[in-house]
Length: 557
Image (cartoon, rainbow, N blue to C red; front, side):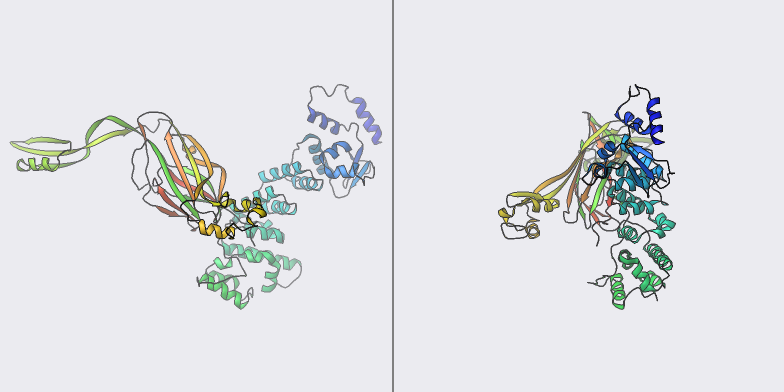
């Protein structure tokens, strides 16, 4: 029966069907029409005489699993493959990608196609599905997608999904899908330092998740059972970051802790020195992104040819520098000749006997003496004129602003090798044991000890670790946020970092740049993890810095 259908298709196919078609079109054509196939797949929802026809050599060319199945040492030579766990529609989508490198996915089938692509090791299709699932992630399906990403170790999908859950933590917690998470997935979400939600709310939902599991297993919902069911995720409920009152409301008479554990948490909350909590993480959750305003614009405003500001960033935890927001820059025209104005100038009434004294006291200044007559009386007023060096130009005047952003870091000269602090691990791998004796320097010190001894050495060189040219139109507000081409990771061990921003007008003229500087030399982020200190320029030309907090899920305990 199947043979006759295939014969009919071949007979009705035009001889010149390949004309004006590229390779992909021809491949999908032979799949669609079942031309010259040599293998048939039967899925769990196929009727007895139904199947999907394909070409072994095409499948083997795209999948190592098919290669082994059809042409490997253990190939059985059969022309029919029974897939008891696969649906025909999913297999069809999978094969369409095999033949054409593209496929139209939908929310209801993308996960199944990804699973099949993972099984047959078609990595490009796995990523194709991952990109699609990333594009349709919502608070309602994020948990399910994250489960999928963790199960099949699709890191790009996992990271994208975690970014979404972190940015929408409150919605995720209130979704019914949160209570259906696997233990591994729950733990992975709570691991994130950037899963930014009220910790009390997190505890309540985790407790509800655990009680639901206990109910499904018909186990008593006691405190110890709730904690045991939460498994590793219990550690990542940041109970020590709660107030004492809230802690008591959450845990009182529930037997979640031993007496020692509870005392340790209370000591931490009360900031008792050297308090140590082992039952739960003490790291406060942070928002995914933070904007740190560095320029309050209360400082001086002086016209200059160019703007150069330099500052130092110190971090107590690893973060990423994502963007720099430039300040509004006024275009200012400097006069070649000197001009003087009475506008906002100081004026003093002068009588006859005080006139010479007034001029003597203001010797060298440009003044104006004005006489006004009221009847027979003369009233004199003296004005000390202000020098006018230039004038503000229209904000509508659009001029190209160009510049450069550089980030530098101290580097240490170690034996005959030069290294940036944040490249320490790479250096340890590259230096041969025979040259400096394993992980010790020629002085017999460890790398860390060497850094400690040389970290403040004035002779240490500076390492340029990031640079980016800047160009924007002066009237375009959207261009003021300069996004780094690649977010720059600033590490606690590599801190501090020096950032320098240079700006100037691209045209040659007497035009100056005029913007406000900051009255503060040091600013600190809301959570105290980032400190920015002025070196020179008083932050003139910039308004704020954008940071991305790192979740630390992969480095967590």
